[in-house]
Image (cartoon, rainbow, N blue to C red; front, side, top):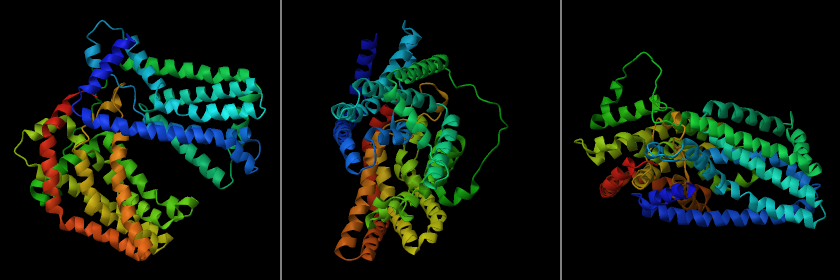
Length: 490
């Protein structure tokens, strides 16, 4: 039966409306996977000798000391990028296939994910080095198996957390408090967690405990998904008092007003869009890593413009990145109306620009760190509005990923507020301004670098009509591919 499921997944991939784009991205992600494999393998081999050379103490104990952070960062990374066990269950539920097999297949798919396998490229070489350097083989094997169990525990914990945001937020808050407490010397959690990880080496039979946790989390996820796996899951709504919202103040935008009103209502009424906007607000504080000297490697001049792009462009990168996917549920209806792509894209552009302006004004608190810090934000905002605003619209024509705004209520809903495809298309928006700034900074002066970036943004405004015609032509060319993709289940 599992072989049959795999064949169905393969046919879904090769028959997808965006097969060519998906294939190219798969190849690119394959190269990225090879890159991370090389990095993790190098760390696995070299970490022992690097720790020993720096005279930081026993290498195994040093690694155990910081494993708690490794595990939490792994969980956060999974939550942001790892796809959930997506199975097109609607046609399967009509067939004589047991629910148990469907759920087992979906969960096993996550177990063989690259997010689990990549850690082996660090821990296997590191464990081999430990044995070569005289550590007890039985203890190393016990410790290694325990580490693998903890990462698989993260895998199934992530499956559950992606459907229960109310659990994740308190966990994230507690961990943030712990990090701050350790940074300022109030409380060091590593003092208490390091002996726990060390115990897996000292007493190898303790390895049974994390593997028991893996089994428990697996069957917890299995029970949860099986309980909620039916076609009308999440359709029942709580009764609330109805209220109307006219947003008449948007009428000043003329024919664009109806689109702007729809977007604002979408943001206010859907959990996924609300979480996306919340994420964009968190981007405002990203600059604290750069302008406070918290991370030494971020002190370079080019990193300031990088921070400015992120601080002012939070909404652009989170919400704007998914135009027109936010409208995927009624996109066919939009395309059947007497509207033009120019009006549709213009409304999205204005929404992104207004949000960027608001973010820039709120980010005025960076003046506390000096005029140079806020200048980077202002320069980044001009570039975002003049260049990146077009790039997100252009990229949207090729991201044919439908967004189900109610999927947070479904056990097998797709978690697509962020994925690798959008991350790859985000890279040009970040690399290009750094290159422009670098040319001015290193050939003339830092001020010239800022001027070059600003002039590029202003040039974007000057050529807005020309650029929009090009983007509109792309959307028209991709129109029917997009409509077909939105009709397909993810």
